Amino acid sequence: MQILRSKDFEDWLNALPAKSQALIEARVFRIEHYDHFGDTKHLGDGLCEFRWKNGLRVYFARTGARIILLLYGGGKNDQKNDIKKAQVLLERHPCNQT
Image (tube, rainbow, N blue to C red; front, side, top):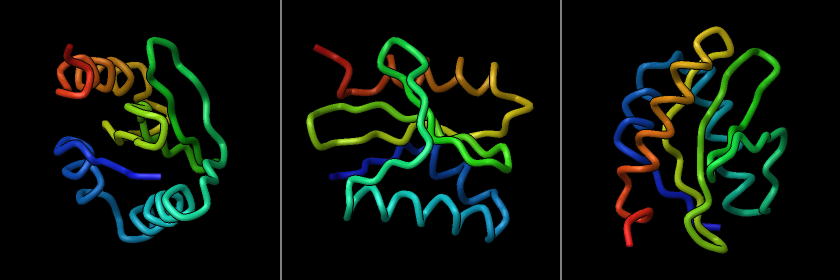
C-alpha cells in the first residue's frame, strides 16, 4: 500500500504531541506494510476516517487500488469542521481531477 500525505495533513500532524504522532505513524506503518487499517469508518463521497479511542481522527481517501491519501486530522470534538475541511481538500487534490 502506498501512502500519500497532503501538506495540510503534515502540518496538522507536526503540531501534535509526540505520543499522538507516534500513534498515527504506527497505524500508517501497519497499513503500508500489512494492509491493516484498524478502526475505520466510511463517511461518504470517497472520504473515510481512521479512529482512535482517545478521539483522534485522520481523514483519508483511496485514490487507487493500492494508494491512500491522508488529507487531514482532528479530534472527536471538532469532527464536523474537520470533515468539511477534508472534503474540500479531497475535491481540490489533483488525484480527484479528470
